[in-house]
Image 1 (cartoon, rainbow, N blue to C red):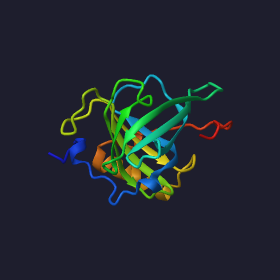
Image 2: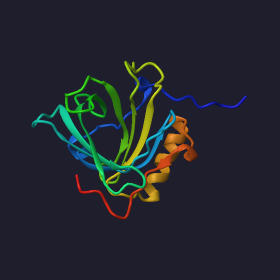
Image 3: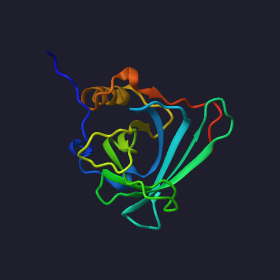
Image 4: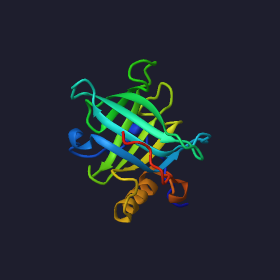
Length: 184
């Protein structure tokens, strides 16, 4: 019997060493993504802007924007309120800047070079515990631009396949239309 890949639980995920939050801030564009559940609402032109919240070095504000397929207008989402006190092991506290119920989603930056790419995994399961499997897991590959060179993308896809148990064919590509969304 051959080796079988088992998706890791969050408590066992290795994150970016010596994570530098200040270098991580700024705009990130989603290049590839995976959800371990059926998706009914696919977004394109997906981008996030990470910044300090109220001049705090612990809490972040994350504004997002995207566009639904075949639509002209972009829409905003968030802002998220994120606790970054544990470096690359962040927690999304709320989806709408403290106006909604707490969500407490683990949001881990597994790999980044800060200038080109970031590999992120997070869990949107209700009452998730990091030592249990995630029912609503998302894996995201981000870039500082709307494209990512193969020299960065291919090793990330291999890592996702080998360690997160998601084959390259399961990763979806985010579509960016010719008419861009406004800059965040």
